[in-house]
Image 1 (cartoon, rainbow, N blue to C red):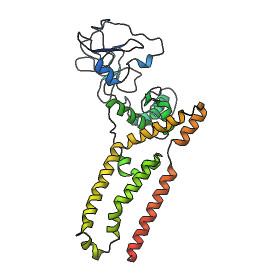
Image 2: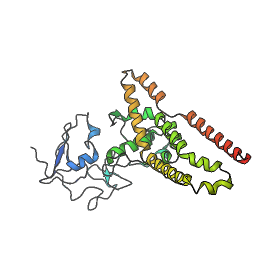
Image 3: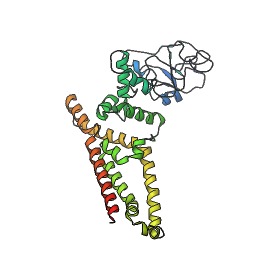
Image 4: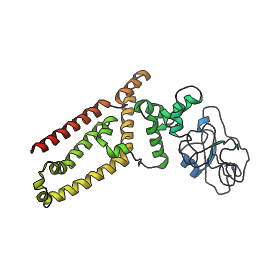
Length: 313
């Protein structure tokens, strides 16, 4: 077995020592600390695969990694790592989109949107917006990021960033304010039809005590709140909050599962690229008319309820 003692791990930039557990990329031969490799999720030189790139020993062993305490300050040139992470300040390769240390994007969303459309660096920023800083050739759940972006449509960069973060952290939790506050409308907007229907039924069912309370004449409210109704009202209110918290924590994971399932179903048809993209855009994207329709119905029902109450019904 080859000895890598004294060589640098491309992730943490520390020299390999005797006894270190090392993972070697089967494609280009780049060695990594075992923990570093699995933290990153792929070879640090994956961007160079396909270019006949083969790792060569350099026998460099500086006292500390660039951008880390004891070494070069973030942003200084050193071993090709010259791009500082705005979050953890570790140095990164010039072309990196995600930080190789903390996994967060190397460019804020504000910077990306401020760049606007254009060519060269501006075009690259637009690409980051569409793919969320994830390599379009990368895969999530066995599907190319480029295909996912085409299917998701609006805000694809946000979702791809969230999906990739789930994989890097090894968990499905990814809080969504839309999922927390407006679950039915959010699921309708993103075409997750079964979950949208389920959340609507849950909302109607759990709101029944509240509707009864709202429609009860003021003279009978005290009587209503001293019987079993008070328990039902409290229980359904707590359940409603629990449902909101659940969807707030798992809405992105639920949406991801829906996206993956639909894309794989389309890909299984074996269509050409043009027809596949057409189906991506038809089955994916967003559904504004459904949100407007439900929102209008809610407004009408609320207005009718107010009028009935005012009329004494």
